[in-house]
Every structure is written in C-alpha cells, then in structure tokens.
Image (cartoon, rainbow, N blue to C red; front, top):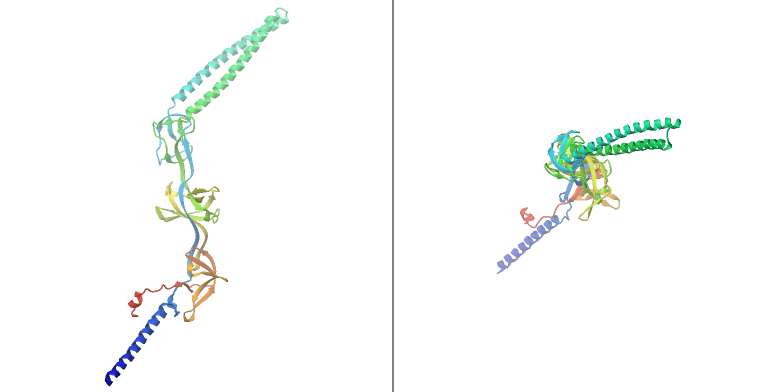
Length: 385
C-alpha cells in the first residue's frame, strides 16, 4: 500500500530527472552543431604567406617553323630523280631534283639552229651591202663625169638602201631569236631544282616518276624550313584578347614534355579572327629558339600569357577576400569566437590566391569559410548519444 505508492513517486521523480538530463544533452549538442556557440574551431582559416602569383591567359598553340620556303617546279615533265628525303638537311644551291628536260632541250637546239641561220643570212647581207656600196660609189663617179644614166645611178642607190634595210630586219630577227633562246635555256635550267636556302626538308609532296604540270600553277615538291627558330601560333578567345599586349611575357610547354618550360614574348596578334563553332578566336604568335631541334613542326603547346605577376608576394586564398561598401576586406578571428573585418588592398590574383599589398602581415590568420556541418551519424561516433 503505502510503501508501493512511495516507490512509485520515487521512480517517477527519477525518470523526470533523467529525461531533463537527456533533453539538456540534446540541446547542448544541437547548440554546438548549429554554430550558435561561436568558437574558433568552427571556422576554416589560413595564414597570410609569401607566394609567386601570375595572372594568366591560357591557350593552346601549334608549333611551326618561323622561316621556310616551298620549293616548286617551273617546268612540266616527269620527275626523274629526287636527291633528298624527309628530314634531310640541305645547303643553298644543293641539287634537290631533276625533271625530264627532253622537250626543253629540243627547243633550245631549234633556237640555236635558227639563230645560226639568221646570222649566216646577216653575213650574206653584209657582203651584198659592201657590193651595193661599191656599185653606188662607181655610179657616183660616173655621174659626176656625165658618163652614166640617171636610171643606173638611181638603181644603185635603191639597191644600197634596200640592202641596209634588210640588214636591220635580220638584226632584229636575230635579237628576237636570241631572246627566245635565252628563255628556253632558262627553262631548261629549271629542269634541275636547287635549294634556295639552307634548312631541313620538312615536307615532301612529290615522288620519282610523277608527272608535273606547271602550265597553270607551280606544283610544290617540298618545303625547306629553318628549324633553329619556331613560331607558336595560338588561338585566343575574344573574351581574353583585349588582355594581350605586344611584348608581354609568355611561356609554354609541349604536351609530350610538360616538364620543360620555354619562355618568349608576344610578337603579334592578327587582326582578322577565325570563327569556330560560333566562337570568335584571334591568332596570337610568338617565336622561340630551338637549339637541338627539340621542338618539331606540328607539336601542340600549352601556352600561358602573363598579364601580371608578383614574386614572393604576401598572399591569402582568394576565398578569404570579400568586397563590401567600403571596399575589400578579410575576416580575422577575434575574442570570444567572434570575427573582425579588416580592410585590405589587393594586387595580382591568379583566382586561387590574391596578393595583399596592405592590411595584413605575414603569418596573420584569415577566415576562408565555415567548417562543414556534421552528418547525423557523426555525433554518435563522437559519443554524444
């Protein structure tokens, strides 16, 4: 009876106490997890420290020889002999190829024969001129002595003039034939193709036995390039092209050897764009020395144009810098878990880190974000329940 009721009240009292304790623990856990208790542990922080920062415009480029010449054929015919192959180094004046020259040779021989015939006719006319001059001189003396007729004198005079005119005609024909012969001889010379410069054969577009037709356009046989200097041609989007300046630093690495960096300066940006899939791209070019021919034509380059740079500059993560009504600022931990706004001035940024030119010292702590909320299982793992 009585003792049972007392026991029941005692049990109910203790259950209330246990329930209150459990509720208090749950409330404390919720308060701690929700961030209402501002402690230094709930913020992600970083320290201001020196770093090299570069503001870059990136692009893909292709390597090509800076200086090259396409060697073509100026005469038609069958390509009889190629004296070089791809990759061969050649010297200026070196024989590269020979074209069948039988047609050109026949033209030259015909021209020489025609020239000899005209010269023989000229000698004959000069002999006739000498005879016509003597006959005219004789008629002059006879006329002065009134020993010849006017008809004989006039005939001798006309013969002299006609002979002189025929000599002029023959001389003109000889000059014309000589000019044509020189052209045919030059064409015959084109049957042998010589290197116009020192360099390396980088393309070979013809084969022995191939028939070449040079009547309309000169067929290209090969390309000779100077590989000591290479040009990198890049495609830059219209959104970035305004950030480029002639003479700005630029560096790149090739896809096959990303560990080697090549430095140069921007030489030119071509004014006419190219539209690829509705994207407007501008061509930017720069040159780089190629000792040892490590860089080859057609290689792909990952290019970085340096808009701004700062070496060993005091910097913080970009996420730490915020912008407000009064300008840029960072938040630093203060007393009792609160945050304090501190105005800063910034410089170069690479979108990962920002240079701080004023407002912080090396080693200062800045807030870069909040600690991520824990999952429902984490409190149990930490023994809260």
